[in-house]
Image 1 (cartoon, rainbow, N blue to C red):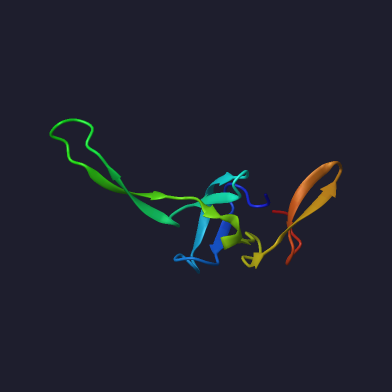
Image 2 (image 1 turned 135 degrees about the vertical axis):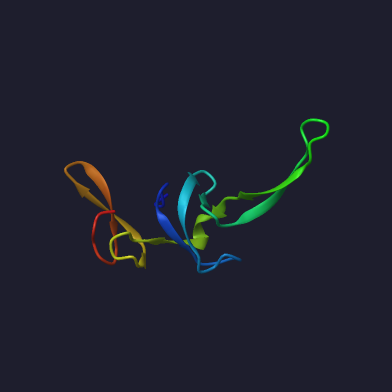
Length: 101
């Protein structure tokens, strides 16, 4: 999976289309990522003790990786990610500006 934790992505489909966010967590097996402030759902929480009130909390839910585009931190354009091998090390590069990510 080419998108990692800490990357900035642009949402290209769904109710949050056009918004940008930072990747909080990635799930490589399911090809999903959690993006900060994107794809929020309301969760109803029961009261734990007697006399306490229940709550409705908004939580982030993972979004499919095909619904996002990577945003390059150097040129700030949406782009694909390439790889470069140098001295037995693998680096991610921006396909538009050619800089290391």
